[in-house]
Picture 1 (tube, rainbow, N blue to C red):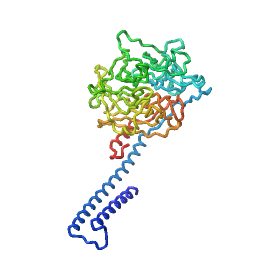
Picture 2: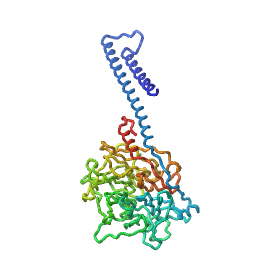
Picture 3: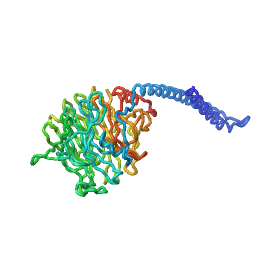
Picture 4: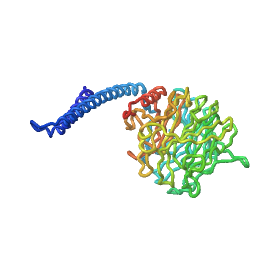
Length: 503
């Protein structure tokens, strides 16, 4: 009925215009007006043209209205089929400076942001390091504790792991790179910062220029840390914090991109490095290239960006590589310029390489459909593949969650978007995943500086972070149950949407 009403109104408007035109040609519509023969002929031709245009417009309007109505119904069915919902894995205890919050360190990790998160092969989650403001002490607190959650099939509890206080471990810090490869039950930690706290005990402020450049390995079974000292002459990334990080970077690899470092810790970086677990070495994949137009393009320098790795296999996109160890890195957003006031990027880049063959790879900027839906880019967000994490028959999906659209003031997001490539489509697209409103009970609060990983079910898992409304730090664990098949269906519907009706 609504479609018929719209079509009727459109037809009436067209008919009124035709009548007005005829009156103008006929002398203003006065009774008994004289029409010369030529003027009468012109009026007849004009009337015929107007009638034809009106009929065509009416048919087009009706067809479009019915098409949009059918597509809207189909989209609703597809959204229901996606069956996406948030599941609270571990309730959180917000940090408000109360005694209860202070006692949280005895039973589970304290609220924090910019922590490290990795999922073991048995599904247990490892959380380490991070930052919070200690309200009881009225001072910032950089952390270096390590926790496991979900140890055992039915045990959904936290357990603190790690060496004694006298044993070697990375010093307290936040913003470090932390990830594992699915072929190992150990994770690598690199960089981060403590704002100068290691040099001035009891410091109450953050001082830039105190980034770390050390590399550590964490045994996710025992909680033991071991520092990796590069051999003489072996390359290693310069000190930094807030680098984009992803695991499964070509077999036994972890990749990091950019971050903040350099002079006084305020310089955004643009280099790409790969850690090889088997060889225990770092390799420089890209030094930042040339963005002046005289050389190969690469992402401009940035920090707090998001990155994921997709094993390409035989299904690499055009311009990529293929093979068992071939991967595609996708880098999105982040903040560029001088910290803390940086410009938030909204560009998407792909880096393709074959780790086994030692091919250097290259950056290519992509322009996915649906990018305008994200509202101007994201910084301090996470981008995590779901499902098996690779490309199957040319298809994959990665979830972008949280983050901010501008650096100051920081108003985080709670929506989830999927970066998707479906079969037969060379162009990627963003598609919004329908989820309940964020209220802290059925969905996580809008957060940024949170941590994310892919669990053993292939789902996105989120820990911690910071929110502004309400202003608080978090230590809850949430899982986005969004089946890969449903997300791909949403993307196909968006590809097939009529013009003007994109998701």
